[in-house]
Image (cartoon, rainbow, N blue to C red; front, side):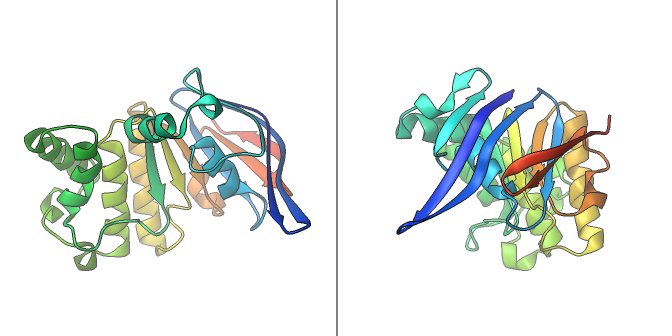
Length: 225
C-alpha cells in the first residue's frame, strides 16, 4: 500500500540545517496495522506527515497504492488526500460550532455527496465508533475520548485506503486511550490499513508491526503478528 524509498527531510533556519529524516526505507502492506515509535524528536510525526502528503520531503520517493505521490500537482495531492486518505490527530481537529454529525459530513459534502447520502454515511460512521446517540452534540459537550472517536468516525466515513493516526491517545486518560485503540483495532480487523504514531508501547499490542525511529533512522522492527 505504501512504499517509501530513501526519504529525507531537512529543515533550514538561516545557515543552520536540521536533518530530521535521514534516508528512510519502509513498506506498509495492505490491511496492516503499523505503529511508529521513538523518543521525542526521533522523527515519528515528520515521517507520518511525509507519508500522508501533509508535508513535502526534501528528497526520496513515496508510492501510495502505486501512485507516485511526489509527482502530483498541488491540486492532485489535495484531491488524493480528500478522496483516499483518512486522518486522526491528537488535538481532534473538530470544528467547535458544528455537531458531531456535521463535523463528519463536511468532508463528504466536499467530495460531492448530496446531503442525504452524507448524513447516512456519517450516522453509520458514528455507529461504528459507538456514538450514534451523540450525533447532535457539539465538541464542547463531549469528553476527550468521545471527541477523538468523532474524529475517527470522520476519517472512516470517507472509506480511506489508509488511516493515519498521529498520537491519537496523547491527550486522553488511560481508559479513553484503551477505548480509542480498541476502535482502531476493530477497524483493522475489518481490513482497514492503519499507520499510527505513538509513544505508548502498551497501545501497540494489537499492531502487526512496530518500527522504532532514533535520530531520523529506523533502528529496529518488531513483528507482532
